[in-house]
Image (cartoon, helix red, strand yellow):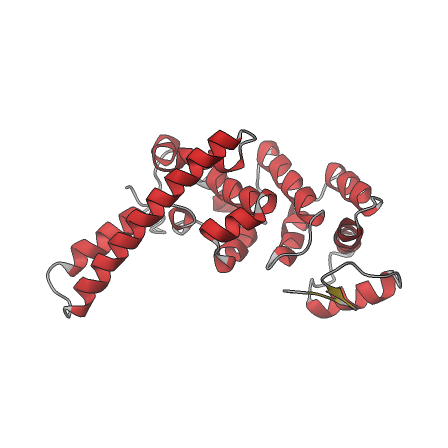
Length: 242
């Protein structure tokens, strides 16, 4: 593994990333067999990571034995072959736009958006989800990545709220475009009550870049936006988990 001398972040090329985590794209595949195979690979990687962690803990309990450093290196190496462990060593801000690991960040977020229960069962990490969303909320992306982020936002606003989904407002503001607004407006006009609220709220914030995306702002907007009956999980101005 190569590292940038200034940041300490991995600078492995795309081929090295594919060798480690290429299987992860199967997690979002339309073919059930491909998804199942990817889950098997993830389970194997997680088992290897846990075994490496167990060896590290044993070495730690020996009060900095000579084997501790080796066990620590082995654990970090095992992490790199799994999700979300393989994504922890990354740049932030504009630099993430050219980082070879970005496609795997997008894959991880897309998996959570499209298969939330599966993601929760096999790779739940709310803190990682939050930090990854914040990292990709940058305006420096090329058109291909911006398009994927627009599709991701469209998917998220149409489902019941999940922990840290509010962070996607950052991404929407970063990739604001006619395409994104058109998709959000369509969702807001749909029969889906979740989409009506989520998409409507994001559109409202896009028109008001100076307004912070806080719980108080959400509650105030929701109270003013509609007096209609609320869907399961929404309690007068609050989405469970927010």
